[in-house]
Image (cartoon, rainbow, N blue to C red; front, side):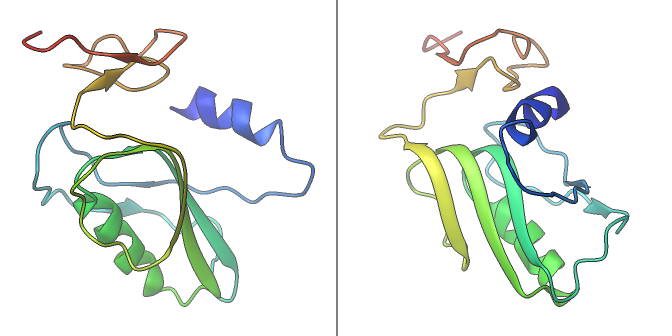
Length: 131
């Protein structure tokens, strides 16, 4: 994922401060109680924050991350992602996405894994049903 973020950042024409937040989960799981890991290397109080992710499946993890970041009093929080799946929970911030899926199909490639495989494909593909 970090190499894909690097590709994105190279396209920006303004200064960017970046930090990392993580809440590991298994794609396809509908609940995530994993601990949130956030080291606060870049202070966000009073700043506009954009959380960038590859895909939002159920939305539960992203909602937890947004709620966690709100505790640090940023000026605003928004979410930018490539894909969002249907039936996700409401995330109470502005969201930007490239594609809203009409099914819950599993995507792989370009950083999206399936059973810790296929992440390195240079494109995004739909995993065949029953794979």
